[in-house]
Length: 249
Ligand code: SF4
Image (tube, rainbow, N blue to C red; front, side, top):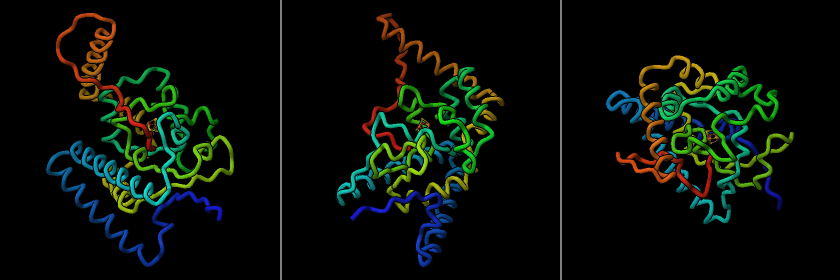
């Protein structure tokens, strides 16, 4: 029998009524835990914990779905989901911007996107919907990509995720605990549309961003020198995006 395809704009709405309250309580519990960690250990520790939690749970879900014969079709090089509307939280935006300098072109791209949100995203011409961090079909900030890019698990053919064509309906494998964590994290950190939030963070240019951007650039330059065969010392860490076989977003 042909599987019915659905997209869950709201995971909560798709839940059976009898477990909605249980889910809401789980969201509240997780929210309390996130706020506690943020208060005690800082907002960046809290964000890292949430990312790790979701990464681990997504891995577990992928194994579970695979055992049920429903392999996840997301894979490296497939980037259709990087053209949909993406949320980011302020600390996630700061983290990304502490590692890269936005180019003029990227700022222009974000300016074109900033008036669009989840409700009117598809009114943007398709080329302008592309995520500002998508380069040559891959995420250029993979290790620090926002939470909303970490939870996506598509089970249909990748082409169906192409939102350039109307009426395509993507089927996602949604894990309850992942959805609960994403929802509680969005509440805790006030997630919002990526373009305006990135622009606000970038334009405010706090000292931390500037300093860490410069340090990052120095490390990139050292790596380039290494590649070019120049001698260099200092043991810079590699900041290249993690090379995984799947891009989850
Ligand atoms: S995975 Fe990376 S390139 Fe894709 S939408 Fe997320 S941040 Fe952008």
